[in-house]
Image (cartoon, rainbow, N blue to C red; front, side, top):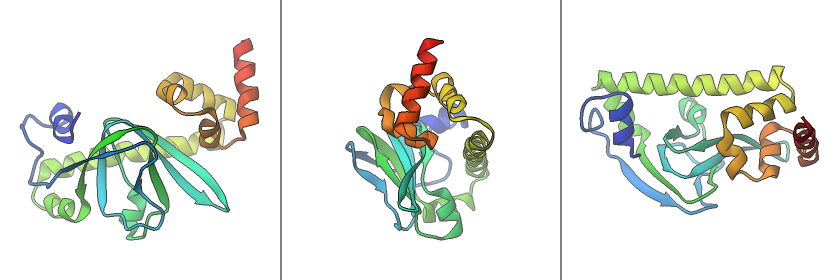
Length: 187
C-alpha cells in the first residue's frame, strides 16, 4: 500500500495526501541501510513492502530496538525532534519498498494543513504507545512472557526473523531463548 492509499484508507476521503508533499519512492535490497548511525535525520519513511529492523549500538553491543513491517512510518524520530544525528541504524531485512518525504517539506506542509497535523499527531501517538509498551514490557515482564507476546501479537517476527535476532530483540542470549522455546514446546 502506498502512503497515499494508507492516508486515504485510514484518514481521508480525498484522493491525494493532504497538502503538497513531494513523495518519493525507493526500493532497498536485503541488507541495505535506510538510515545509519550518526546520519542526519532528514526523511520520514513509510514502509510499503518488506520489513526492517531498528538497531542501536551501546556499550559495544548491538541492541535491536524494534522490527517494522509494511504500512508503518519509520525514522529516528527522537533524533529528529532533538536535532541530533541518528543513534539508530535502520536496515532492510528483506527487499523493501518505501515512500518517503523530507522533514523540511513536512514541517512547511504542517503549517498549511489541519488534516496533515491530525494525521501526524495520531501517527506520533501510535509510535509513542508502541515505545512505552515495549519499555513497560521490559520492566515488568520476563523474557518468556515477552516471547509469548511476540508469538501471540507479532507472529510475523517469529516467521521472518532469525532466532538469534529475536533473542537480541528480547535482550537475552540465544541459548536462553532456546531454553524458553523448549519449555514452551513441552506445554
